[in-house]
Length: 92
Image 1: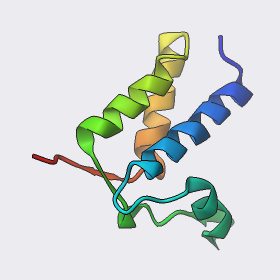
Image 2: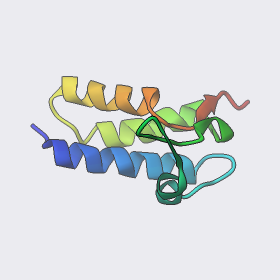
Image 3: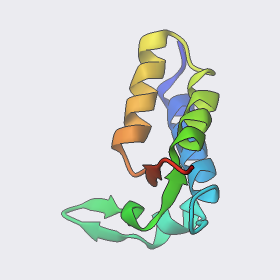
Image 4: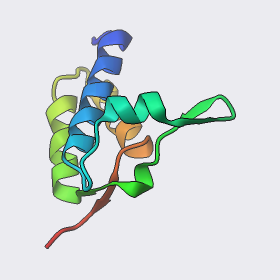
C-alpha cells in the first residue's frame, strides 16, 4: 500500500501537471504560495483556469495508476476532482 506521504506528493504532482496544461497556464506552486487564506484554508482560484475534460482525466489516470490498492486510487481521483483542479470542459 502507498504511504500517505507518497500519495500527497502524487497529488501535488498531478495538480502541477493539470495547471501546466490549463488555459491560462499556471504554476501550481506559485498559486499555492500566493493564494488567499480564508478561515484558515488556502483558496486557489481554480475557477479562473480551464482544461479539456479528456486531458484532465488522462492526467489523473496517469497518476492514479501508480497507486494500489484500487480503493486508494479511487480516493486519489476523488481528491483531485473534488479539490482545486482547474474547471474541465469538453473541447470539440
